[in-house]
Image (cartoon, rainbow, N blue to C red; front, top):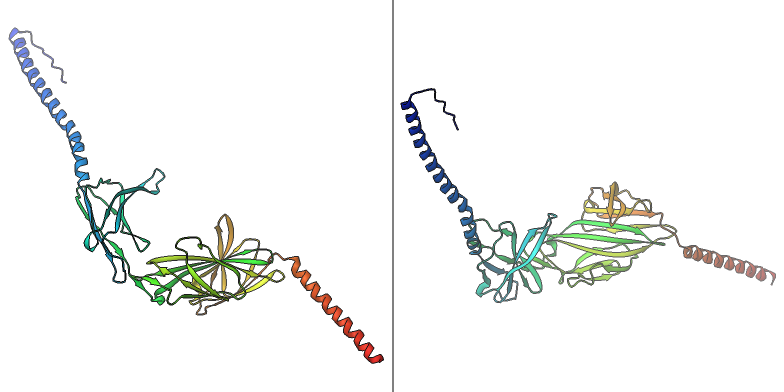
Length: 357
């Protein structure tokens, strides 16, 4: 505010000054009142918009269709479809909140969720179960101003084209025992086709080393356990592989003799997809087909990692030594030596008796 300095001594000048001051004061009071009303109006706008926002966000419809393939015998009508919600927890991990709604499909697999309570910061996904398997849609987000979202759940067909299954990676984790080694194989298979692949009519074959014992699938207690048959060292896998990647883990034991053994493993693909892991400072490995690639921690144990050389060969041979030995093997050898000595002594005295006679 400016300070007005009056340097006049006449009464006219003073009256003129006070008249100007009164007019100025009236104008300022009017401006203040108008500014206050305008501020009050602007301040109330956010509350008005916020109070109208929930009705806008609740008026959202999510609809779509469960599309079955020609090879599926299940009817598309009467399937349960669940709307799921996912948010980020304080640690930044994606966490499911729970079902936001459940409806049944109508004719041709159509479904619809109405008056969905939308969260602009959450992700949503649709899921259903067909022939005992769970299938989901892609995760989608609700944007501000949207009132209708359409998304479908695709149920793939079933194919018996085993050749479309591709081996992505094979890992052999070798751990030492007493006179034995335990081999855990992690087989990663990729199905890039648009159908599920059923290997029950034509099993997927894996050739394992000879002399394996105590073979077992690691997920044999799971409802979706992989069915298999083992004939000597030939493993036949009978399973319906979904679209994408599938990991199969199995384990077996091989016997070592006097602290060492040789493993001969045959694959149906090149060796560049094969990795071998051995615990550090325990087992020693030697092979012309393997290259040391560093260290890796698995289940709080440090392993030495070995990669296969790129070649056209599918035969992997390597020798493992420094396996803890058992006294039974030496006892057995000692017993064999004693038997041979006794046999030699018996044969010697028999020949002498023959000569004397």
